[in-house]
Length: 311
Ligand code: ACO
Image 1 (cartoon, helix red, strand yellow):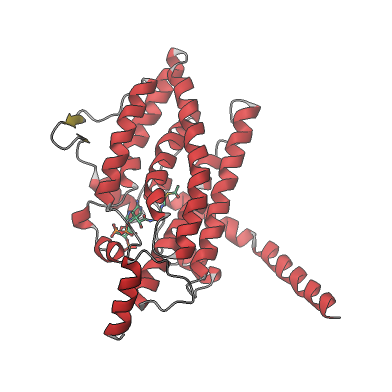
Image 2 (cartoon, rainbow, N blue to C red):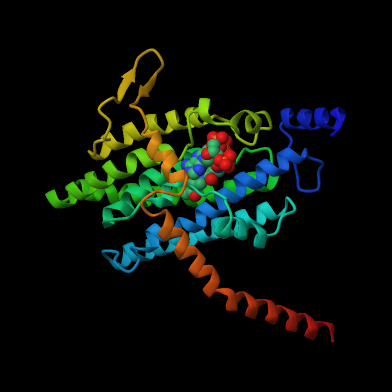
């Protein structure tokens, strides 16, 4: 690709212009976006499973309605992220194929089991909380369709996080059993939520390129630190303890230092060996295969409708 075009592209990025689907872009930029945006879309879709597990068992009608709405929102996020990815010249069929039968990744966080209802509270607070920190930045990403998708996603994520935090606060202020459940859920979800931000910057092969192109505006470690600082305050406000004895305020940096993330566990989950990896993939494949007739029926209906209109 000629240097002049590359320079012009870089200048546009640095001037804060959005790159739109029909604009010229380096092939590598396109490939990186397809990788990252489709991974994000797959994550939203698989992310419905751990929470969907509790819709039938939500403790009240109100909680059931809220959870149902939240899980539906995740489906919506997945769908518009797939559409945004399609603007890069790849079809949804191909993307889904890479995900269900190929090697496309999705977020490690969705490979953990939801054992009690308190997990639903902790997920809202921690997992959606981490997603907001990550995606508020991505809402400023250089690729127009991705940036706009994230603006909308963040609005909904912020409701998800608030409902989780509110429920957790209630539990943490409840009976001793409820308090214990809330603390147990926080203990189990804390470290996996820190892993959502990806490997340390020194082990993140994609960061430099993505930051140069302003697809990512902050590094994995910068966003993780921002998240930790916020969560320390929020945990204290509702009386839950974060399970890290090394959490300590650092006067010099103005941030909270924290302990070593269990990276072996992270890579193990990324490689497909987490507690729920196999089951999640099995459930997604089954849903996709059993939904074949729905896709066929919809396509057939669209074909007939078009024929009628042409008459
Ligand atoms: N889970 C699974 N895989 C991960 C994770 C994770 N938490 N973090 C990093 N990886 C993978 C990367 O995909 C990459 O693999 P690949 O090159 O084979 O694709 C590898 O580990 C190395 O990581 P990085 O070089 O740091 O990758 P990148 O610069 O893309 O940063 C990150 C990873 C932070 C996840 C980024 O892609 C991102 O912000 N994505 C969009 C947000 C997203 O996907 N969120 C999903 C969960 S939030 C939700 O849906 C509620």
